[in-house]
Length: 348
Image (cartoon, rainbow, N blue to C red; front, side):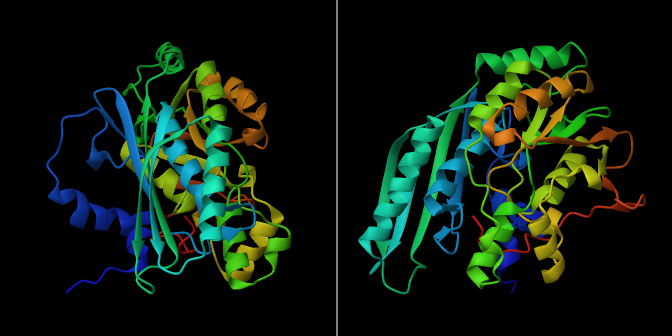
């Protein structure tokens, strides 16, 4: 009998296979704009965008953030990358008996501060307690709803002036040959910072998690126009995001390795640990696919925000098989394979 393994929930190919075989296959398919089996960051039902996310990060507190900040940021970002405006958050907190109430207060305070920062309130919730030893301290599940804003209509109108957009939303399947790929900042910060702090490798003196809500930055990009797809590269990192896009959009993505922002500390840590930095999850970054005519303007708008000041163009979509081709810094080319899962477990 097949047993569940950590990689079944760690992003990447194994999680996609597990979800398709053991989760979504048991649910009836709904006739909606973005259905469950599309496996986008959110679903769309009757023009309402809806998402839900579970958070099991270990440890609860780490350099640059905590489980509460991740819970709010990640859920707000999942709504935002669809092109929607997040309206409200639901929070379900499951606590282990014996956990210090002071820890609960610190996490809830962080959730409240992050909610205020992004301007999206927590509007409903639930709290449960499990027996000592039946749970690892705390699990938080957050959900959110959003609606289609006027600036998404503008964005799609601009994109349509250059080519027919295949979807009213910024879905994974929208990228087409010619589109430019933009990342909003440095890759790998969150996963390496958390791993280093958790395992005591010592990199935490230089690296901090990037966890942050991105809805305000994304709004700036959409108001410029021409954005056709977005995704936050969490579990499985940039490599997983790009491979999902290539597979769902049925085109090749040509990426320049030298243009991908990666801190020296992340590169050095990954080299020491034998980890591919592009497979490591992020919690405060966004990848965008933009029609080529608007790419520079969108990049300029993103760089004008605190969240996107280190944004960069890293490549473009081309005609070709559904794959990601990485042009290496030494001038060669290699296929960037989708990861089986994030090499750092329990980072979100």
